[in-house]
Structure formats: structure tokens, C-alpha cells
Image (cartoon, rainbow, N blue to C red; front, side, top):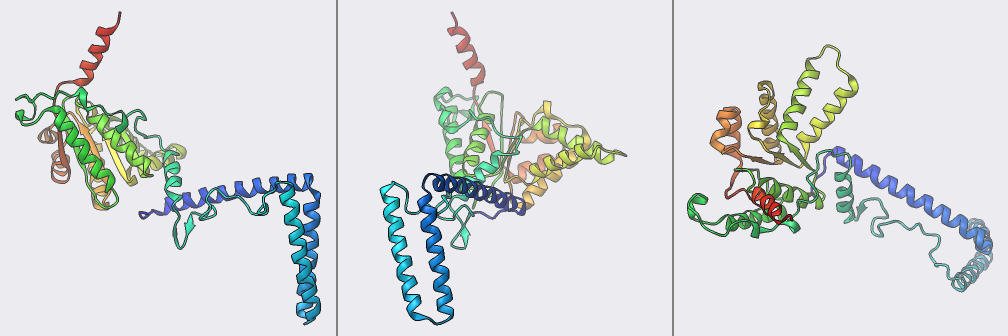
Length: 344
């Protein structure tokens, strides 16, 4: 289990508290119905309680014969109750609350460590309150390398490999990254012309990590710059709306602290107003210093970033990111044309 920040720990605690409360309420309702249908069970329980109290009193007074007598009566009551339960097909452990996890009893804690069920719990929490989720249909199971050309052409990868070979290699690289995510901090800059699979690949990675319970943010670059600009406006406002300010603050915090941040389409259309570049650089630096992975897709080559955005942005990405080129024909356009040609 990877380390969790305090916010996630609190949410996890609330999650399990709610699960236990629900389980306990269901059990109370179950017992109420059981006692109503089989009042004999309550009679057995009351008798056992009476004998148990008498045994305690006898123990205090050191009345050994009475202790022995009440011990035998309790055993007899238990035997009679078990026979009654079996005759009526009632579970012998009817008194026990049925928690969802039999290991930790829905506490999330087992043998001084997080229970195995917390991975599923984190996955559920990750999918809650996150407005920046990757497209659900972009997953590795839907990945089809055959749509990429298997021909080696000079214009793509200098003819050394085909787009098909390249995309398979990129998928393998990201599979290793996903499998070793907790131990292997990396950043990736996926760049290339439109329709070469950058966004699809990044979304596949994001969805695979979400399945592991990783906290993922998948956001368009345009939207990211808009949020940062909005934050600037609120900070400089004389009397900002407190609700709006809190909403933007929480979104910024979500983006800054996500375990993996996926920024899609950092291209010409996503150029933010100049005073957001400093915030974007601060974001890249903060995540780099915190060991939080960031993936970025763009139509711009690394050397073009400095010209179109800011030299500092270009240097940070070229110096701290694995540069991953996507080359080939626009498969998105080719597939659209194929579908169009098939229409009657």
C-alpha cells in the first residue's frame, strides 16, 4: 500500500465509518425481524443473560457450587438454542454483524496495516468528486495497433521503424510504467501531429491507473489555463465570491496534488494569457519536486515549446520529461473517411 496524504486518509476513514454504520443498521433490522418471527430466540437469549449474571454474582461470592450450576445451565441453553436454529434453518452466527470485508470488519485495518479491501475503496473514492476523469472508452482493451501503418517510410521515424511498431513499443513502455507506478517516478511528453494516437494512449494510461486506485486528473490544457486565470482574477478581486473562491481553490488543490496529472493538447489553441505561464511553471516545478508524475500531449515538438509558450516551460519539459514522439498518418481522419465511404 502506497503512502496516503491526510485528506485521503480522512476520506477513507469516513468511507469505512459509513460502511460499518450501514452494516450495523441492516443487522439491527435483521434481528428485529428475526425476533418477531421467532420470539423463542429472544427467550433463549434472555435466559442465557439471566444465568450469566447469576454466575457472575456467584463468582464474586465464591459460591462454587452455584457457579458450576449456572455454567451447566448456560451450556444447556446454548445447546437448545442451536437445535432450534438448525431446525428453522437460521444461521448459528445470526448474532454477528455481516460486514462486507471479513478480514477487517469494514475498518480498513488488518494486522496493523491497511486491509486488502482498501485498494477497492480507494478506487471508489478516486471516482468520486473528480470532474476531470479520462474518457471511459479509451482503454487498452480497445487499443488496436492494426490501424497504424506497418510500412516503414522515410517521413516517419526516418524509416527506421513503422508507426505500427512504434505504437506497440509505446504501449509496452507505458505498461511497464503502470506496473511499476509506485516505485518508478516518471514524466512523459507525448508529441506529434494530430490523429497519431497521443490522447488515446494517455487516456489508456490514465484509466489503467484509475483501476489501480490511483488518483488521476485528466484535463484539457485550455481548461487548465482557464482555471489558473480564474484563480488569478479571484486573488486580485477586492470582494471575491467566497463560494466561487472555495470551488476554484479545491480544484487547484486537486490538480496540484493528484498522483498523476494528464494534460491534453498543450498546443497553439491552448496558449494561455501570459500571466498564467508563471502558474503553469509553478505547477510543473511543484509536481517535479513532490515526485508526482505528469503526462502531457501536444502537437508541438519540444523545441517549439519555448517559441510558442515560454522558454522556462520548454526547458522544464525537455529536461525532466521522457520525450515520446508519435508519427504517422492521421488515423482518425482515415477512419472517418473509411466510415464515410461505407455509407450507402
